[in-house]
Image (cartoon, rainbow, N blue to C red; front, side, top):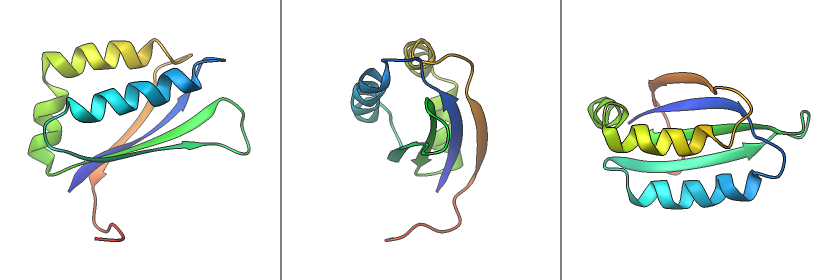
Length: 96
């Protein structure tokens, strides 16, 4: 598996919109495996997103698609700034 972790600052009042976006995006994304969104206890408005794909190829194909660009624009509108991305191979996931 392959994926990304993002640190992001969500605009005030947009948390429910972020959750709804994630619910829609998972159904429209080929190769998608899972997504988790964490709300920081320490920093209000700060969230962490993890997304997993079947493979690096599926991740890269999705990232290069016009559909993903449109989804990103919708997602980005919910944030105060660009997210901080950290891509990489998923070497362990529990439960498998």
